[in-house]
Length: 249
Length: 110
Image (cartoon, rainbow over all chains, first blue to last red):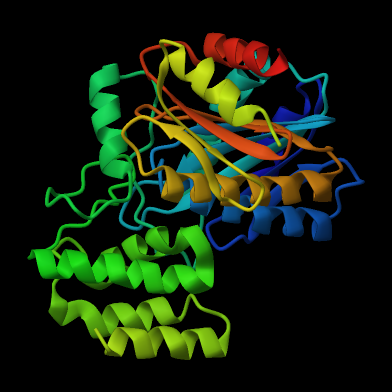
């Protein structure tokens, strides 16, 4: 039972509610003040998953997100189950301005451990996410020097000019087989940016990762990549223009 | 025009904990960045994260978004909203994030 665990979080001063959300934004469990009914929490769950999905493009090892608003706080804790079918969940805690974040941190850690145990032992929960889970980050082991951090962020800098395998924070580096493939990806990003703006580079990176997996991108992957990227363009005219531009390359 | 790009360049980028930073406007356009990063792409990602969390705040009645702290063993990051612009600062993971948060707040308050 997840609700009793969420109830213990509500006993911390300032906490107004807590919920567990899966990667498809389904509300798995919640325990909140009556002003936060299920429809509100469901709406919030979708925004939480959107925020986490985008943050994970850069920091797929994130542990806790503390969000400070003018009139309260929202804490998101990453929950990753292990086993044959690892899954990702987010524990969200809604709090007012009186919350002591350090105090909640202890309760959050305890609750996360119990929730993961429950989620691992319980029946499988429907999830449409294709995200590949990573081991739970403890945040206490292995310190990284500033220099290596700079290098890793550089690798995370969403650039495919390098030919090293992805080992950055998001694992989002793209390996290419030849300079021509790299030139194609740059041109492809430029064409996509006309429709989706500066997120184009991120979309291209994600699409390459989905199409190629761990192997380097080559010109043979172009049709699959273009088909994949086309789905990210909502406007039909823009999509047709993008496909036409890609065919001409 | 927001003073955030100037504050970021002149004050925040010089703090010893900072490994990289990026400033974007309310629509995700790049205003300033330092460090070995792709400022345009990372700035856009941070803006999308911030906008999704702003929607959370609106739905929950928590008021305007001020700051996001992302704890991560390798890439801790602070995202602050200032005059509608968004600043994301990457911090050396070997340095205490809480202490840096206070420094950042002080720099933005000036």
